[in-house]
Image (cartoon, rainbow, N blue to C red; front, side, top):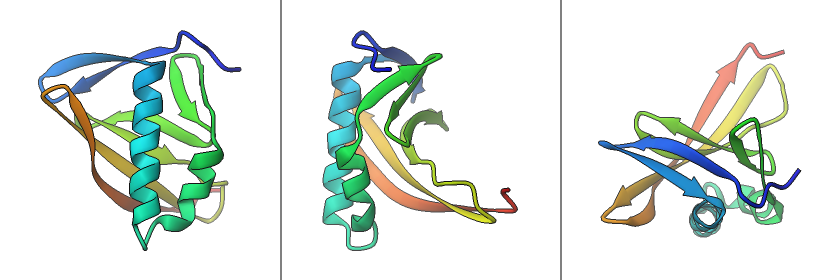
Length: 114
């Protein structure tokens, strides 16, 4: 279901940014680089490395990773399989003067999922 002309608009800081395939691929590569360099999160890098960008219903994904807008920031979230305790890996991006960087990586755990 690869969509060559995929775009999505995100609220980032005080502006609206429309991202296309090139930007999503660049963000995926930034996330991959940061995951690879992190001892704590390195194990998640191969999954993202094997992923391909695709979109459906205006949502852009890289495999099981999902691009979202949280607190006026673009994030890439790994969606784990459903389980009683689910561990989400969240890569946060910063946008400054036309350039993207990884602002941080964190864990989010959700209990009670079935």
